[in-house]
Length: 59
Image (cartoon, rainbow, N blue to C red; front, side, top):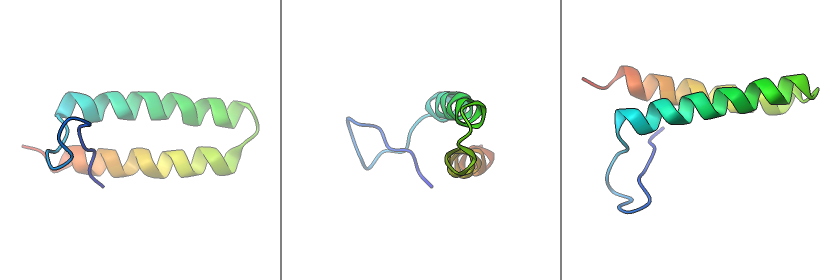
């Protein structure tokens, strides 16, 4: 899974952009769990895992 910058869709996002996405999505997943939406939380966590994998591949 690749995060793309809005200004240039062919350029991969920075490490900071990926970390920001992970933080924001993790907060959304937690909120979904608190609101009783486990399916939504699980889907969001899958996206977070994809971002973590991309981050792990970075130098």
